Amino acid sequence: MKLSISLTINGQPQEIALDDPRVTLLDLLRERLHLTGTKKGCDRGQCGACTVLVDGRRINSCLSLAASLDGAQVTTIEGLAVGEALHPVQAAFIECDGFQCGFCTPGQIMSAVGLMAEGHAGDDPERVRELMSGNLCRCGAYQGITEAVLEAQRTVLEKGSDAA
Image (cartoon, rainbow, N blue to C red):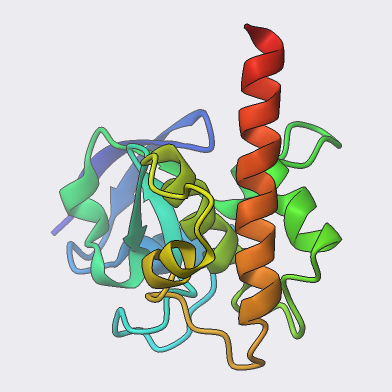
C-alpha cells in the first residue's frame, strides 16, 4: 500500500511517497531524507534524542507516524541555522559547554527551541531543568545545558527589546 504525504521540512515543501504507513517520522527523516542530525536513541520516546518541532511544537519523532503528519511543518536541527549564522540556542550550547559527546545535543537543542517558543523558559534554572527533563544526557552535561537555555533566552529577549 502506497501513501503520499506532503510535509514542509526545514522550510522546503516535500511530496513523499510512503511504501509503509507504519514508518515513523524519525525513520523518514534519517533513512529517506538523509537528515541524520535527529538521533535514534531509545526508539521508545524515553530519551528525547529524536526531538524535532512539528508545527512549532516539540515531539519525539520516534513515536510519530509520518502518515499522520500530512500537511505539517517539520523543523529539524539542520533547519535552525541561517547560512553560517547559528540559532541563539546553538550558539549558547557552544558558549556554555552544553554538550560532551554530542549524541543528545540535537534533541536537547530542539527541545530548548520549542521550550522557548512555548514561552516557558523564563529565567528559573529549576523550571528549565524540569521542562527539559524529557531529554536525557548520558554524559551528565545538564549544568551546561541549563545554562545554555537560560543564556539563549536572555539573548532572544535582548534582541527582542532591541527591535522595539
